[in-house]
Each structure stands twice: as C-alpha cells, then as structure tokens.
Length: 273
Ligand code: DGL
Image (tube, rainbow, N blue to C red):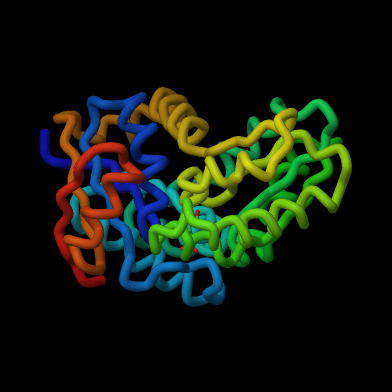
C-alpha cells in the first residue's frame, strides 16, 4: 500500500497534545504532523489570514499523500475549516477530507455538566468566532456557554513560560474573569490545544468541583468512530505505524519544545509553505 499518512496540523506545538492521544488510540496508522511555527500564533490573526495559512497547509498535506487532515487547532477549525470544506475540498479531490476539533468536542461536552453552565477558554479568534456557543447550542440547547479569550496563553506556552510566576498573572486573571460570568460554571473546556500544557497552573485557580476538559482524548475517540463509519476514507490511510514531524521554523527549536507536548523525543524537518 502506498504511503498515505493522516495529516495533523496546528499553528505550532499545541496539536501535538492531540496527536499524542490519537497515536495512543490508533497506533497502526501513519501520521504526518505540521506545525506552522514560523507564523504562530494564529489566535489574533484575521479570518482571511488564518484561512489562507490553513489552506496552504492542507494543500501541503495532500501533496504529501494524505487523504485525511485533522486541524488540531481550534483557531483554524473556527476560522478556516468551514470555508475549506465548502469551497476548496470539492476542487482538491473527492477523496480528500479535512476535519476539525470543535465538532467532536461540542457533540459530547454537554455530558460533563450538571449545572448546564459551561466555560470556554480559547484564543481571541476562537472566542470571537462564537463557534462554541453556536455548536454547543445545536446539541445541548439547555446549556449556557460562557467564554473568555486568553490571548497571552499560547505565547506563554510557546515560550516555555507556562510554569512561571508570569503565567500566574495571566492564567489567574482569565480564569477569574470566566468564573465571574456565572456562579454555576461546573465544566471548563480548554478550547485551545496548547492549553493542556498549562494544566497545573490552571488547576491552581479553578475550584476542585469544576471539571476541566482537554480535547486530545475526545478528538482521538471521535477519529476512531469516524474511521469506523467511513471505510472509503479509512482505506486511504496507510498503516505502518510511522510518525513524521515538519515545521515551518527551525527544526532544532521544534524538537526541543515538541518533546514536552508529545511526551517523547521528536525529530522534525523544515518546510516552506
Ligand atoms: N493550538 C491552537 C488552538 O487550538 C493555538 C492557536 C494559535 O496559534 O493562537 O487554537
């Protein structure tokens, strides 16, 4: 069978927290990870820019032989996925698919809350897109969704500041703002794939009775289900258990950081988009 890896994309390292869970649940497939580190973070960029960058990445994955690409980035899922699915995929090939992280999360998030008050922490782009309130409302109309944009968090993570006193200030104040929006918030979604790296800091500021949800496992479980339901796509995914990592910035930097996100040493290659 020819090499047809599953593509996993993020603006930087965050998507590795998703890839790690996907590989745990589906170790048999080949995976290609791309971090657009040279242009990260995406969170404060316009719709047009995030769309353009994400489309370039999707096209790159397809050129490498991927049929299926997962946008392991909420910002790209919120700002680019729908346009790519509706406008670009029909031209790129009938057997090509691009999936995001928002839909699998919103499908099940309502199962975690008893109070029906959910808090979303995400980038400016994700929060401004209103994707989470809109999508959660489709599945769980009784749930109230409260959002807080955390524009500094991705930079804290990408610059290894996630365990420092500097992180206390930003993490603490954003969580305080979120929790002030409604007394009953009992579930907080980390709606950015970088945020699991901040989990220890986040826990310091979130009361113990509040459930904190990361997306990696949710997205991985949803992919297992998707591949089971779509044999026509699954048959285009090669199975040699190989992993390859690419970055648009310096491979040495990528490898240094990526090990923390992925939990294992990583050796990346540079590409230009
Ligand atoms: N990991 C991306 C996300 O989930 C980070 C976005 C960014 O680059 O700002 O939204």
